[in-house]
Structures are given as C-alpha cells and as structure tokens.
Length: 73
Image 1 (cartoon, rainbow, N blue to C red):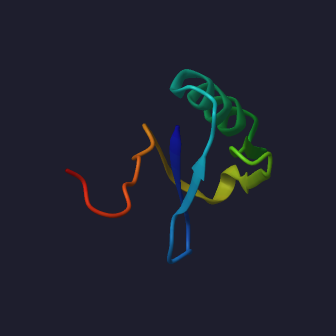
Image 2 (tube, one colour; image 1 turned 135 degrees about the horizontal axis):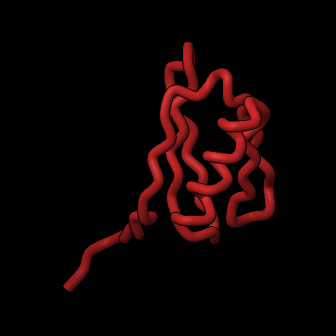
C-alpha cells in the first residue's frame, strides 16, 4: 500500500510503502490526529516513519503502483 503524506511548509511529499491495508492505515491516521500526537507508520523494510500530526497537510492512501523496467511484449 502506498501512502503519500503532505507536510506543511515542506516542498515534497513523503511516500511510504507499507504492507498494511487501507483500513489499518486510515485507523492509524485517525487515532494520531485525534490524540494530536505522532503519526507512526512502518514501511516495507521495517523502518519507522514519524510525523507530528500538527504538521500534516494531507494523507493520501492508495494502492502502490508497480513499476516496470524495460520493454514489455
């Protein structure tokens, strides 16, 4: 699952690839915003991404795009 996080006053968005499904990510975002704490996500490689909810501009939850390299027949 690909999660794009917009952060206030940051030029680029943060993209996290996670194994969690959309409902689980949405629940984590909702709980973090309600508690006014940190949004904590774990990516596919086990790294933790922490974003203060006071700085969130948006969170886009979608399926990860599978990239193809080279020519396809």
